[in-house]
Amino acid sequence: MSSTQGFQRLRAGELADWLSAHPDALILDARDERHHALGHLNGSVRLDGRNHERLLMRESKTRPVLIYCYHGNASQTYADMFVDFGFACVADLMGGWEAWMQSGPQASTAEAAAGGRSTNLDEAVPPFLQTWLSDHEFEHINEAGAHGNTPLMEAAWRGETAIVQALIDLGVNLHATNGDGNNALWLACVSNDPALVILLAQAGVAIDHLNATGATCLMYAASSSKPDIVRVLLALGADPLIQTQDDFSALDMAASLACLQLLRSATKSASKVTA
Image (cartoon, rainbow, N blue to C red; front, side, top):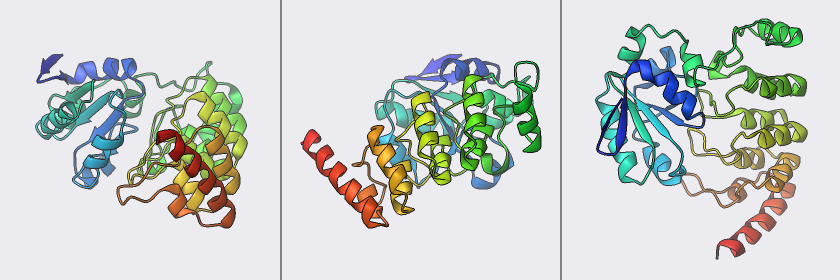
């Protein structure tokens, strides 16, 4: 590992250990959409000219950041940018994706994105969960499947609380995001299950995470007219003042009177606190 201008340069062989030490890292893929679709580190978000300003301005400066590109050139430029904006822990991958693929990593890319902690279907996984994983074509508890969804995301989307709890108990990567930049909490909101939303939030899934378009779970619930989910998210501490890159808040997106009333009250209270 080497350091230059305030950020770390990781060799391919050091990547899994770094990810294991920084499980909540923001992983950014600076390659084009086609190459990202062909293969990427699980949980990575595409970094391009449309979303870098939002990430720089709205992500916590204390959140670790890992950036990789094709050969390790563009990633240095982006790493410098994040350092200049005050991010305390920034790293890039020397040699980029090509070096990672040529290194013959022992772990799959899905395992690496989970810090090398992916678990095979063995005695550590309860039989009922082994069956569920097999039925949904997953080989590992941190594997990214269709659309980049992990088993945790899949179970959350399906509203299968017992499976979600079992995966949490096994220590799956709670910070993974899919191809749209959504985490498991977003998928639980889609399933419209307040109890599942509470379970995931209390387990540590980020409640105010911004997806690839700059939207939060609260914005989704408001725009989808899910007042029960809006109520639970607000009770859990979701921030109603967050705005998209187009300056829209959850209140602006409210699609029903019930959501509008909940968000109007929450926005008013939050505005007083920040005033």
